[in-house]
Amino acid sequence: MSKFIFKSNSAILATSPSPAWTTGQQSGYFIPLVQNSEISLSIDRQTSKQVGSQQYAIDDLIKSPDVSFNMSYLFSPYMINEYLMGLYGGSTGANPMITTQLNRNQNFYMIINDQQNDDLLRQFSEAPKRTGFSGLNCLSIGNCFLTNYSVGFQVGSLPSASMSFLGSNLKIDSLTGNTITIPAINLVSGNASGAGFLDFNELKNSFSGYVSGAYLDEPNVYKLPVVSPQNVDATLENLQVGGYPIASGALIQSLNISIPFERTSLYGLGSNYVYGRKLQTPLRATVDLSATVDNFNSGDISQLHISEEKYDFEIKFSDPKKISEGIFNFKNAKINSFSYSLGINGTMSFSANYSIEITDTQGFEASPIIKWDGVNQQWQNIAFSWQEF
Image (cartoon, rainbow, N blue to C red; front, side):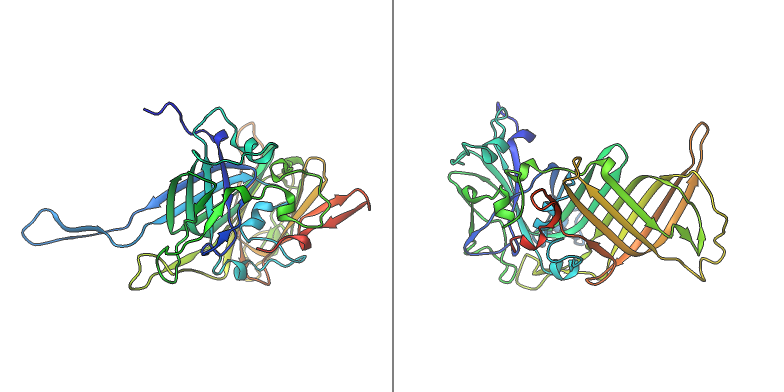
């Protein structure tokens, strides 16, 4: 029986840029503010009986299993994790989600130290930094395609985000040096012959690895500010149904955003692996809203099917000191359902579910990360300085 157990303080998570497959050295980036991660496999078996027997004649795996990878993290106004996964970045108001996610796939690395009393994060992010990696363990997932992104804002809680991925391979290695063979499969040939490597000594954790020429005073990405719940400002325009107001002066209690990236796995003869995971367009995001009601306006929903309203949402968020700030914009949302509830000794609450059609040109925008420049006394847009993957 092992005298050590794996604990969260002894593990860190890293990723590499797209594409996942390379025959050379791959760059690696730490993923900050992670709260939870999960790896699971789905095994697909084909079974068949035959006449004269109670047993299966065939009970075999017919293709390599898909690997599901989920992670959640505290939401930062810098949106570094969103940038690392190819969701945001570029110029103001430009978020070509569909274009960047069509064939984007990347690798993930969970590095674990079996010495439960050692904080692995400190060894990577603070001087003197660790230079030897022998004895560490690494779980790596290859060819991960994004399948869902969600963000939740709630009264009295730190906002959090989560992402889900579907990958093609899982490797478990006990390190004997500073490098590891990447877990990616060459999706064209259907094998891993000639796979490249990642050097843990080259993992980037400072802003210089992510951003160039920006006004930033944080020494590394592990000291990022997070969004403060009291600094989330949600503005909902035209909160009504069928042209008639359903509530006004509502006090928002929670706002949850989910953007599924539905994909179809593509297989071909002669390979056990997918050669692609086709993105289904347009994306159809959902927004769930919960609020306290303090007033009514007159109206009804009898004309909903004739004159349906569309709704716009703007969500501004910043860190506790309001040094950094970001914005989400949703356009032309349509309502799916809404309800009112009132209990004894309680307050009336309103909840609603909306859907938004997202393309490269409409539906959703996320402004580039901005930061207060104390020298020039102005908000500075640093998105233009992001290193391109």
